[in-house]
Image (cartoon, rainbow, N blue to C red; front, side, top):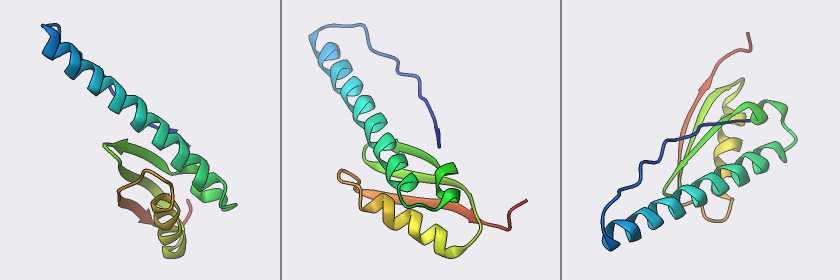
Length: 100
């Protein structure tokens, strides 16, 4: 499973900026946790190709990327991601192509 990392730049102002920074940090932690849970759910399906799917999460929106060998696996990945608690939406950018 491949996970992408993001850079978080925190504002350095007054109390309002501190509250905003704390909210951003919390959102990033929640996104990373959700991406990990989706990745584990994909691995738990028992289909090896789903273990290599790239999972990115932003504000409970899950992005699935990579290649799979059939439309069945593409649909299974989407359904599996949607079944994870906390996921609000899935963008399935998986490409169906023959294995190289």
